[in-house]
Length: 172
Length: 245
Image (tube, rainbow over all chains, first blue to last red; front, top):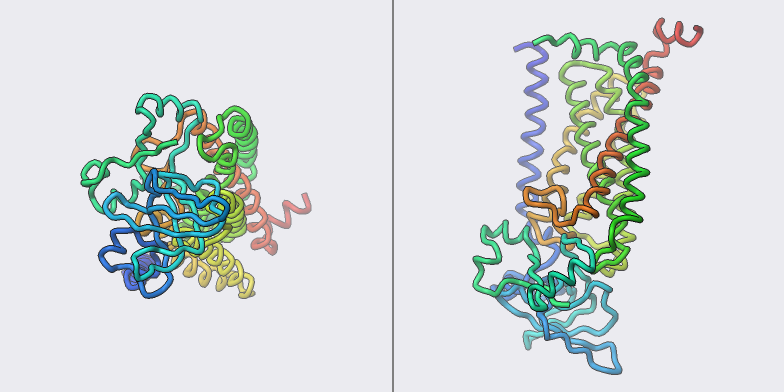
């Protein structure tokens, strides 16, 4: 082996070693890397229900209930398979709305209600002009088909069409 | 295959010369594209149906983030070439990449935070995508710090090249973080297998900006590479001749 070939082997070896170490480390810390848990993970007991965690999903349309005169509100977070009821008191970000992604940070109570002290909106990757959004809305009778999280569908190997739940939609 | 062109790239005076010739061919198109893309993105493109005009920060944020990854890959590739073929010019190119990449990383982080506050409701969360991008900044800074800490250029080249190659694993982690894990950051709108999730009047300025930023990076890299070559070759006869001529 020439010195140059030895150096090529060295560089490839470094790359392989570091990639393997990185992959193992990320696998080991899988739960800690997850930014939030979805309602299905909560239902199956994967979420750390004994402590504070983040719950992520879509705001189920028609469930947002703002208590007048206060900042209190409750709504249902869904992944179109399972639902979790969320209680929150405070100001929500601009993009918080029905059928949009949301990440709530808080604690799951014994009654199954998630008490959040922080609400973040999760934006999807779709961009369009307001007129276009309006015309799509008209065509679909007030409901707009938007995939809430195509990455997740790809991860699970099933698109929204294959899931038993109705196709997620944005209403506005 | 004729490898003469590759071997000539090992010659500092040759690279110094062609870098000087090529610079305006990248700098001018970069400037024109960025100005045109700013007009297209900030004036011609419609506001977003949900974010309004706030979405327009994407015209700086996404190209910067893309460049931060592209520059790191360039840097690691140049470092590996320098290590394997003992090519000093490749090490010089890798060293010239670092500061530019670090700045693009800073821009992507800052613009992301400014957008995150009104849209997500927070400047910063320890999300996989955001955290990995911050680690990228630390990799750049570590690379520059390591180089600055070793006085002997040849030793600095070798040590920093290993760091650059080790750090490359972070690049796919950043790219795929939003697909591998639950993340607050949205999935890619443009750099994906499917059709872009954006109409043409928003997309075209974004792609122009992307090309413009890339050409800008190449132009800056060529200028920095020339400076780096001069610094390294300051004792050689061709630099002395060029300086006195």
